[in-house]
Image 1 (cartoon, rainbow, N blue to C red):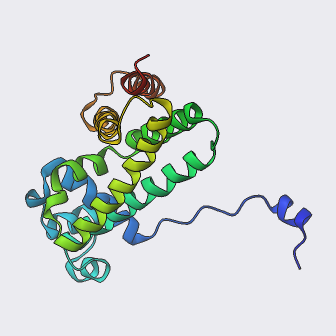
Image 2: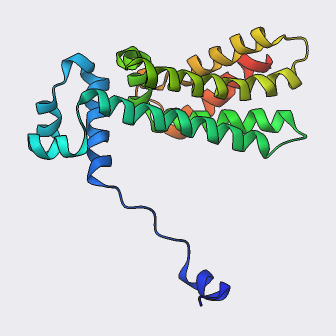
Image 3: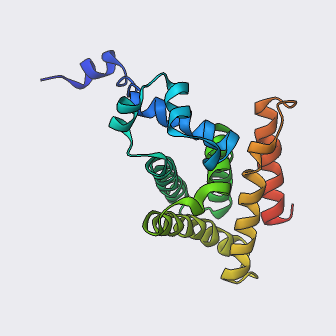
Length: 201
């Protein structure tokens, strides 16, 4: 049996190796974001990924399946990440809000193509996955609303939702930002602007 000391000497487990499916999906997301869903064919994706038609369809049934595979896990990750950060600060709503902002800013800076895809292509999805994504989004928004309601009791829930959505619009502007500003500075500016928009200071 492996002892705790042995586990510590071995270090943390190695990160999961990216699968070929993951690589193809990342390429497809980038193409969709750059050209639009209808501006990209399966042949375009296969060519960019160095995969022939039959091999590509082994991983995905089509472009629609790629869109679902890109957007649902992201929505799940945002919800679970948001819930985890709120849970870390049960008695400190200010710290919870700061953690939520840090979390979402990092997500936005790391995933501009996914954000662009979500903004422009969500309605391409069939009704059921679209409904699932919308539900996950609503639950994520409510994590922010709960924190804002504690910090700003003068707001009712609909008003807090307006502020939360305005904050997402600000943070999710990252696909449209140029590279003139260093990434660390961009993150700091986005955090500052978002906190000011939500709290007014």
